[in-house]
Length: 153
Image 1 (cartoon, rainbow, N blue to C red):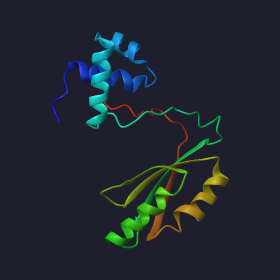
Image 2: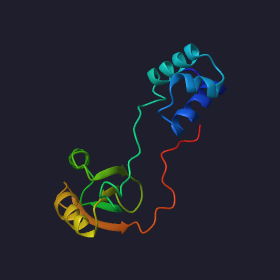
Image 3: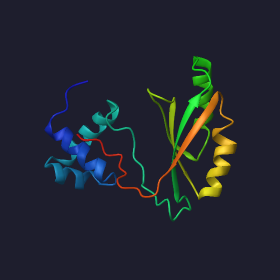
Image 4: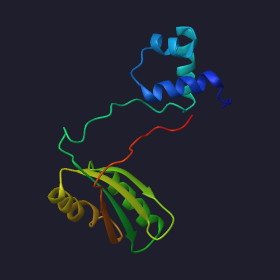
């Protein structure tokens, strides 16, 4: 992969802020011809810099008002338990993110549910039955201060 130049970075920043920009609007913002811009976007996608596009949805409008983080500690840390845990987490629509972490616990799970009752159901039906789960600690978000998927380019 070649190094990103100034124009590649401008394209990535613009698309990261507004993924629905038309090629003509994007070309205008980065001061390039539409053809050259389209070719750069294709290359950036082909090389894996651009992974896809999505819409940001309102959790409140969709009845997913409660954001929780759950620390999960496993009873044993073996490849088969890791694989089974990962496969089970991927099947849950409530789980937004799951990260294996280094430190005092094994996984950090980010989930969105309707409310506390829905969270109790999620914990008892999704998290606790997961393979190898020994202990959990839950942190309910009272106020989201900053939430972004923006990566500095």
